[in-house]
Amino acid sequence: MILNKKNNFVFKKSTMKKKEIEFWENHYLNKIEFTIKQDISKMMDALNSKDKIRNDWINAFKKSSNRNSDFARGAERIYFWLFNQFGIPNSSPIGSDLFFETYNAFVHIDIKTAKINNKTDYKGRIAVGKNQTSYSLSEENYTVNLPTFYQYKNKICLTYFINIIYEEIENEINIKAIYVIAVPNGKLSTFYGYDVYNASKNKGSGFRYKYQAKPKFELLKEKPYRIRRLFLSKELKEEDIIGFKIQ
Image 1 (cartoon, rainbow, N blue to C red):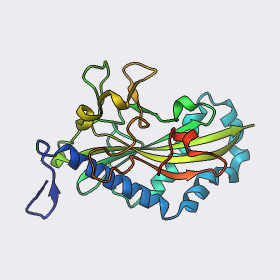
Image 2 (image 1 turned 180 degrees about the horizontal axis):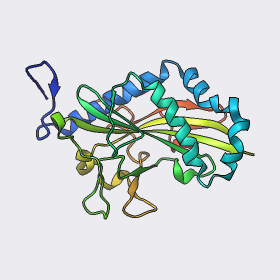
Image 3 (image 1 turned 135 degrees about the horizontal axis):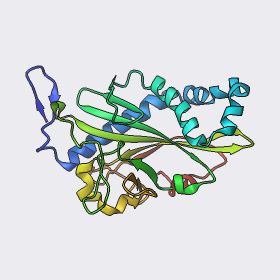
Image 4 (image 1 turned 135 degrees about the vertical axis):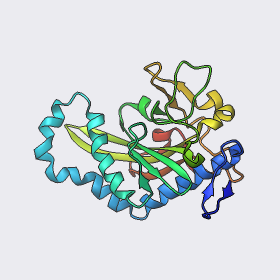
């Protein structure tokens, strides 16, 4: 990392060490967590704002063939609002639901929703699409469409997921847990390798990031968690949602 004539930090792609990558992954994970935790009730009230007009959309929702996607689309609006001061939005068609440029990075944040009765979609793992990560393994038959570093000023590419687990009973949607997860940059694939990899249901479309296997930033001294709890219903145990308990 160097300081240019305009006193801006610029990364040299060839010299950034794996520990530095994890430092910035953790830095922006902290920033995401702080942004949301300033007012958890604000987030929850906004996510539940759908209930005010439930009678106007519920019939169309019942007929939908992909309710998860419909629910996620509504949640995306809320997080774009919450992150309106996070960075400069980027209009690239290849990237995450929320995509921001900051002074030293390009930050992707995807919203993933999962029904609580389908544990394969959340407990200890999360589906990662090829437009949502730079993490790849050369031995596997899949490609990713995000770079480890963008050519523009060699800014690092960082990817995160906000995982919303909800319960649907008689078309009533209740949020049960929300976590934010940092996916390793592709340069870290030589370190994390297959430990955090599960093949996707659809070959060639991506993989499942198995964060339960290595839930911490292994290269940082304090080894903070790569996953942070934003909300958990009092009636649930954390182990039942992410497969372990955050200390």
